[in-house]
Image (cartoon, rainbow, N blue to C red):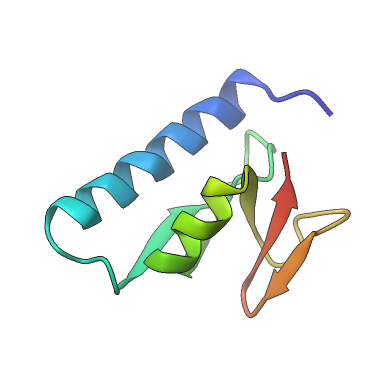
Length: 84
């Protein structure tokens, strides 16, 4: 599946949220992100611990709301990680 402009935009927004959290010393807090499922109509929020977000992003995964992924590589309470 190829990524769309919407996917890139949502991912950039989430990266900015994480960057701001780090800048303000919220490294251990939970981030409220936007689902990266690729549906341009989706605005579902996903709560992810900041350290978990960094780990998943470093491995190239997208973070999606529970039930928004066909094949999740990792499943957590409220969200899943999907290989990019």
